[in-house]
Figure 1 (tube, rainbow, N blue to C red):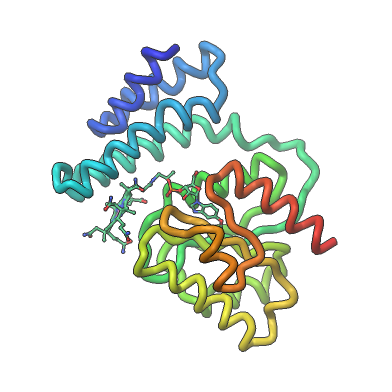
Figure 2: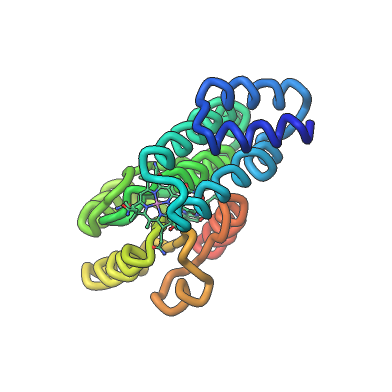
Length: 214
Ligand code: B1M
């Protein structure tokens, strides 16, 4: 199993979409859980890509191909993650903030929330504050989830929270923030109700926020 995990990481790094899908199927068939496949196969590959990108040894087209490879493998995992017969835990509106196009982590959070029984409305990427507010008005979610992957866009999380307050809507919804540059401390500073370091933690935080609201 370890060898297959290593090959899966390598497939993400080299952007071999088909191979990654096949390896994911193989790992599931051998009894690996979706979470093990994400943690030990997909994420190490993506972390390596991130490090090479930072060093200027991988470029955007390659990173995009790796991202597509990871997304394809996650699509294979999705039916195992999303179980249809969990009673609804609450509603979450989620999106990646304005100016930010990263969505792999947000998609993973969405899938895990769905798997845990939350109804999730996904607004996609590059979502302006007004669109978040509109969705909160329309769907009246328990939680608003804001994802940001860039130090330049994490400030948009603060702006969305401020816009909610200015519109008199802050009391009606819990705000959860996350994304690689975001920290617990930052979440507290901007007045968020919760911070998820990972998709798994996001589910735990969402559960506790819904409890608080009930
Ligand atoms: Co981008 N990028 N990127 N990129 N990219 C980063 C984030 C970067 C760290 C790479 C680097 O320099 N090492 C860097 C940011 C530096 C910074 O701001 N400090 C960076 C940069 C600079 C850029 C561009 C500016 C590059 C350029 O154009 N010069 C550009 C910006 C575009 C834009 O958004 N406007 C850019 C573009 C891209 C691609 C389009 C090529 C592609 C995105 C494709 C896509 O998402 N569809 C991309 C990618 C893939 C990355 C890296 C390599 C991988 C991100 C990822 O998907 N990780 C990334 C380096 C890295 O993070 N290692 C990088 C896997 C994912 C599962 O993890 O997203 O962290 P993550 O999500 C986690 C947690 O953070 C958490 O749970 C998830 C699962 O555990 N989480 C939440 C996320 N959202 C949450 C929300 C929650 C709770 C938890 O509650 C609501």
